[in-house]
Image 1 (cartoon, rainbow, N blue to C red):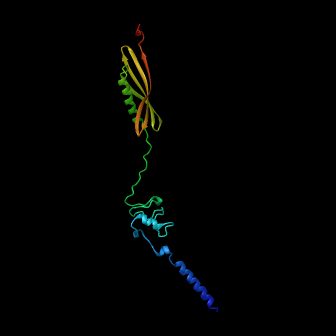
Image 2 (image 1 turned 60 degrees about the vertical axis):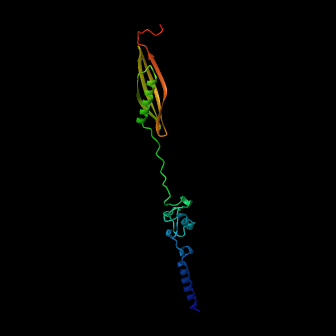
Image 3 (image 1 turned 120 degrees about the vertical axis):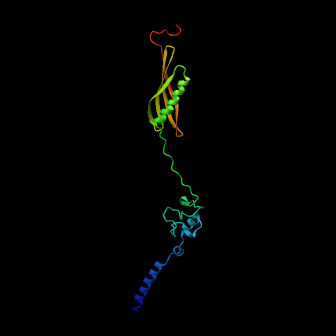
Length: 185
């Protein structure tokens, strides 16, 4: 009887060790990505917990290199039909040079349409935001003995990633030279 207890202990230990070494049902059927026709099929077998190790990088997508149809779970898989998404473009920054050029166009249009002025120029431009620059302009001319000077303010904004300028304010002064007889007298 003394031999039976140690023998029973040894058999119990051996049986426990053997059961611990036995493969689980998932390990007994070892699937690899090569066993599947497409990514969606591999994703079905991966299931919860990925018992077959089909998700090599642990991102929730099994066999990403298999062709589609792809699973929609966890972002889908890789494959031939996936298209990379590009990052959005950086916010548009309206440069002072582009704003000045657009302001010159507005000042030139003002000079063409105003009979009392003959020339115009753009002076200082200052930034009021990433997509807004204000420029000051001057238009001058003579008609007879009178001088006309107009101060212009041009607002330039970025619209659809392009500068768009508009005339914001106009302040014109007409001066008769000293000693000249005003008209109508």
